[in-house]
Image 1 (spheres, helix red, strand yellow):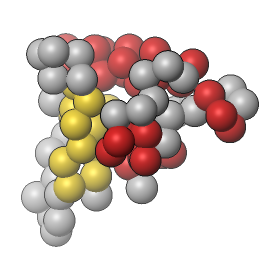
Image 2 (cartoon, rainbow, N blue to C red):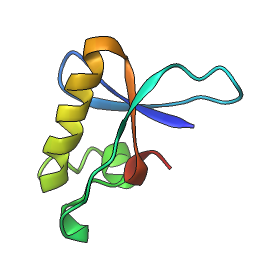
Image 3 (tube, helix red, strand yellow):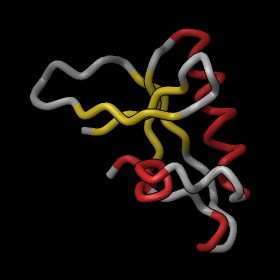
Image 4 (tube, one colour):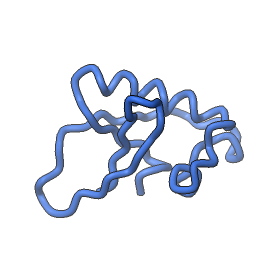
Length: 79
């Protein structure tokens, strides 16, 4: 399972967890805009999604997850 994390510089990172040792995480579930506006796994890996409309939703989820959790999951980015 891959989980996202928002670091102290406001950037996203992906961490892969294997087996049963998966930490608690938040889940972002929402409706994406047009396909071209959703942030994809590739966008995160290549750091190219910051100009897309969906990026703000990811950032907000990461910010909220930092309140009690370290990681979060988004269906289109973490699979």
